[in-house]
Image 1 (cartoon, rainbow, N blue to C red):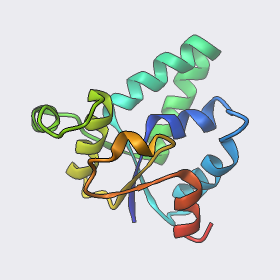
Image 2 (tube, rainbow, N blue to C red):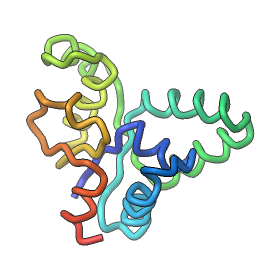
Image 3 (cartoon, one colour):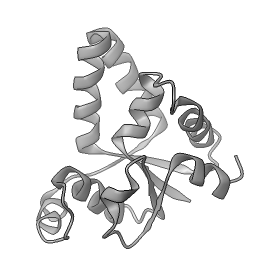
Image 4 (tube, rainbow, N blue to C red):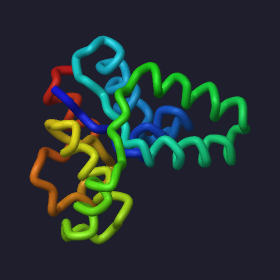
Length: 137
């Protein structure tokens, strides 16, 4: 199962966001065990790096970006992704880029805490706990 991880789920793990970290860590473990193929959108990497550096420092950011690049495949953001994102009917441009990147890698779904932002999606959109149940974690 190919799953693209939204930025917020990755940040839940790396910043240890108390209310959300448990489900997100279990999904990271599923990626490590190859129970799912994890993808992260290329533009999410820069957002994550910026926020980690701002909150925890440059070295923390660099170490964790390296970890993400080892664990996850990177879904590209290219001209096709951006062009398609202009006409998808999403309210938020960042979300539609994530969605179109997921389509480019033939993802079976996206895991996010912001399901409402992906109402126009034509693939499965999971809350972290829903994906855990779907994969038996």
